Structures are given as structure tokens and as C-alpha cells.
Image 1 (cartoon, rainbow, N blue to C red):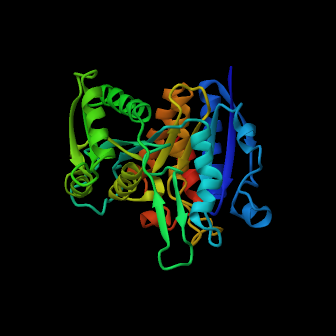
Image 2 (image 1 turned 90 degrees about the horizontal axis):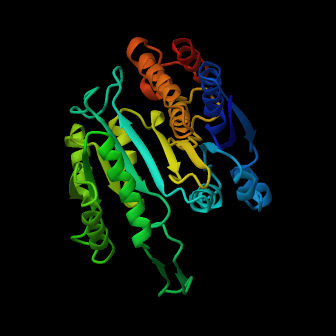
Length: 352
């Protein structure tokens, strides 16, 4: 029987409320498909810890995660701690230390979910956003000068390397080849004069290695509009760190609720553990009320199982998610219902 070592980082807010449902689902699938999951929980890695001790995680936190097969994260961020402090103190160091250079965001309109977008029809909208996850616009290069004076300034440098861009493009093209054979690249080379033409050049270079994939490129502003106007036209969308971040959240809203959206932070070479997380954030406005939607965490757990080599178990989870939404009226508050997290989880487990 295969055993996987899983790090659990509940984090902040509703993170601690959505990870237990994901664990329940994972344990059911483990018994069904013949694998076990050995959990190590890091309950203290959070904004509360930062306020108490000045750090989101211990100094040796990365080393504590290094021997794990995967990481399941709840949420990061809470009032009183600036977002750049919480993210750069936990989430981003994990992504970069473990070279999780692919951020994978599946977008699917499920039957039973009414998208706020008229043209987003269940069964027709099914695409993936592939975001470069460790460089690009979110670099650490830059600084602040002349603080407090009239000529105070801030400089933030975008960093695009041939290696970094090429590897995420190869992942996206390969994924498109396995899906519907279409790829769209997000760019802004009409306004950003150095990094985006470089990105476009590398897209064209890598496309030659994937002749089976039809591809095009769209300026980010027009692409955002087309996500709303024509969401069913997309298959795989690849973008830089900033563009992919914005597009994937927009796409999750098009799908009906950011509460159901999963994400994977992948090290495709599997030299380091990959990390899986719902993208809804810590939602401090509803934390502690027991009404958080667990689907984002559960779907993220399915992506984790697929990465760990259990695709059939992952399909069981996504099938159960689809069944709950299509065949029942059980809904959490973000989906217009009144069910609690526990009630929603019970129905999911029943159908699973």
C-alpha cells in the first residue's frame, strides 16, 4: 500500500474550517483506492503567530516541509497583518524554495451553478489557466528611496528569464496537447516594451515544438473582456505571474464562485513537494461561523491526488462535486444557499 506524507497548513481564517472536510474526503478515497496519507499539521503557521512572534513560520519551516510528498494549504492573511507580510512570510517562500513554478487553475462551470455571466453555460466552459509562479512581475528586485521626502520613490523590477518562461510555456503547451489542442498566451507587448516582447518571442519559439497545438496571443485587457464575453472559447491560457494571477481570479468568478476554485503550485519535475490550495483566501468576514464553502479545498485535494499518481481517485472527487451541485439543492452561502460547511461536507461524502 502506497503511503504519502502530507503537510497540512491551515493558516488563517476559514483555512482551518475547510481543510478538515478535504481530509475526510481524502481518507475515504484512500480506503477505496488502496493508499494511505500520513498527515503532519502545522497549525501555528499563521498571522496570529506573526503578531505573537514576528514570523509566519519558524526559521527552519522550509526544511520541515522538505521531506513531504505534498502540501495542502488552507488560507493566508488576516486583518492586522499587511498582505505583503503574510504572503512573503509563508506562501511565496514555499513556492520559491520548492521551485513550484507552475500555478495551475482549472475553471469549470458546473451544472447547478448559475454563472453571473450570461454566456457561461454549464458543460461548455472548461479551461485551465497556467500561471508562471516564481518570477515575472512578482520579483524581489527593487526598493524604496528617500522615504518621507517629496522625492520619495519606489522601484519594482519585473524579471523574466529564458529558463523561467520556457519551462512554464512547455508545461502549458504539453497540457494543451493533452486537452483540446488550443493555447492562448496573455501578453501586453504593445505597451510593455521589453519583457512582453521577450515573452512573445519565447511563445513562438516553443510553439514550434508542439505542432499539434493551435495557439494565439491576446493582449491582457482584451483577453479579460473575452473571458466575460466568450468564456467557452478557451482551452489552456498561459500568462506571466501577474497576468495569470488576475485572469485566474476573474475566471473563477465567471465560473460562479471563487469559493469553489482550486489551485496547484507544481514542481513538475517532482524534485520538491508541490502545494495545493483553495484560492478563496482567509475570508475573515465569515471565519468562525461554520459556513465556508469546502469545495475549493476538496477540489484542491483532488488535484493533489492526481499529482501523486491517483487519477481515478481524483475523478471520484470531481464526480462527487459535480453530483452535489447537479443533483441536490445543498448550497453554502456563497452559492446562494443556507447549508453549513458540515452539512455540505456530509452531502458530499454521502454521494462520494
